[in-house]
Length: 72
Image (tube, one colour):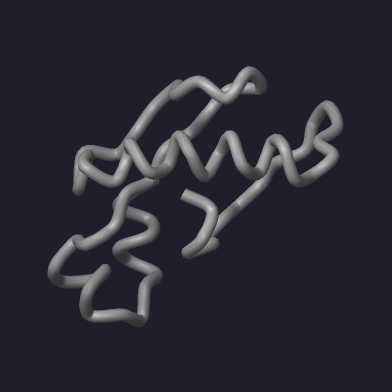
């Protein structure tokens, strides 16, 4: 998942500096898998996921993609 983001990115920070993190979280909000780029972001990602689960009605089969700077 990280390589796809890197290949499709326009930003130099993502494309060349690899300044991003990607992760998949399960329906309970727990980490399932992450791309090994900047793992320090994962701490903030957990808060972001918990915020999204609180703020958005999520139904079975839904996926959420987030880049919300204040939610985590």
